[in-house]
Length: 192
Image 1 (cartoon, rainbow, N blue to C red):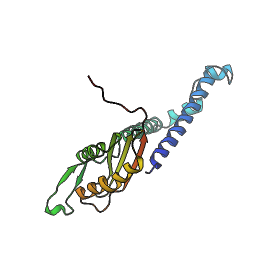
Image 2 (cartoon, one colour):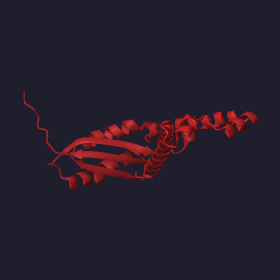
Image 3 (cartoon, one colour):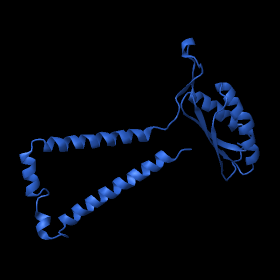
Image 4 (tube, rainbow, N blue to C red):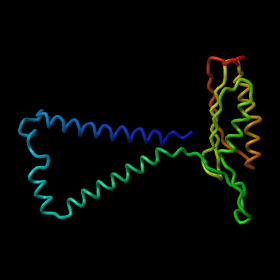
């Protein structure tokens, strides 16, 4: 799995956080008089900056445009956080001229989850198709109980579930990442 976007996201957030914390700390220190009482009561913009802004009519519109660009970048980043990379559907016909057959990726994932959920010892399954319709990739998260055999579980996923998925999608290969997680505390059925 490609962790580069997550790494870039964390790095960007750290850099923005450090810059904002430094600016806020400097403003707070100035307001509290750490740099002297004269600076604490002085206007934020110096006389030279105010004169420059008065002499150049483009200054405040440029500041406003920069603020709008930063706001739009922030909104784009915020919207990107909601994207999961999940594939909404798959086109099964290679030739669009002959018609299109679309299959819901959610339906495929649900069928795969139901199949793997029947394997002995499996407690919970989460399947996701990501990527593109032409090159789908499968992500499986499987939680199994203490009495399950993880090697047998992996073998069944590799030899039964994934080949059935490839056949259903009419693909030669579907790159797959399987994460197995042991969960403790076997649940026994309650008799009423």
